[in-house]
Length: 306
Ligand code: PPS
Image (cartoon, rainbow, N blue to C red; front, side, top):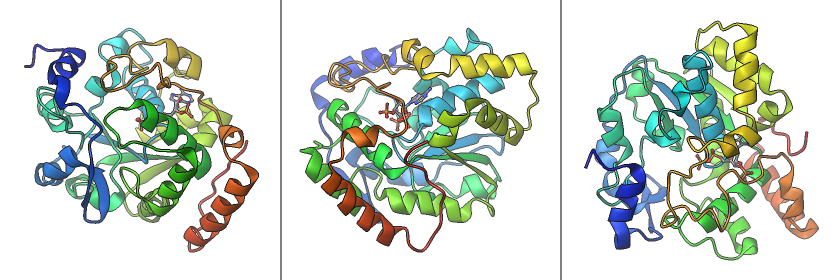
């Protein structure tokens, strides 16, 4: 099994790949394979040197994973092309039919320090991360663009529940019925814990506005100090255009039975404000009114345009 590439393992899994149903874990809807393996995920013990990158799906995870890998490898593009993103930086909770390796399978084979991706809401993150005082980066993206990106992803990711029509999808998002649950609770959960747990809380919009500033922010958080020219290179290598063309960062490693990139590319647009091309004025009004209610208890400085 270990000899199979990710792509070969997916081909071998064949007919067992389908749009998996969601099963709630402590109230959070998760893909059935994740829910069925929940105990082993919850029991995961990280090393204190491991770094967690946590996001609601489609908030800028892959971008941040690439920045972090380059920072840890002094901006060396070749080293960071050693393997596709999910092999370099495993997805903690992901479980798929065999022989596709789970996130835990991949993590077991790696020595710390590891860079670990998760979409779990704060309360479902294995407690060892906080007991071991692991560093954690959270990336948040404004709800409307996050929703648009998730919709396109659910169209092309053939293991996610059927998205259905756009209008209905907006309501599923507002009700927290999509995989990994409510965006509102997700962004709030990490926001409220960020100081106590020393979580670096970033915004996708800030990364778009001034990528260099945010790369430097991540560098300082990781207690690294890299020369200016290396930072310049990292900003360049992690531009949307360059990552879209990089086969080790654009998810072309996941073949069509799972990611059908002819429906929508993983690196789709990479913009702030694309929601204006999708929401009708009426949909935007309904969404904004609901947003006010769901976010009234907290002030997180999201920007829907920059
Ligand atoms: S996932 O599946 O949850 O891990 O997806 P995630 O990586 O979090 O989010 C994918 C969206 O991020 C965009 N992206 C980028 N934007 C700007 N610059 C860079 N370098 C970059 N890399 C990825 C990607 O295009 C998805 O957003 P949309 O709006 O769909 O284009």
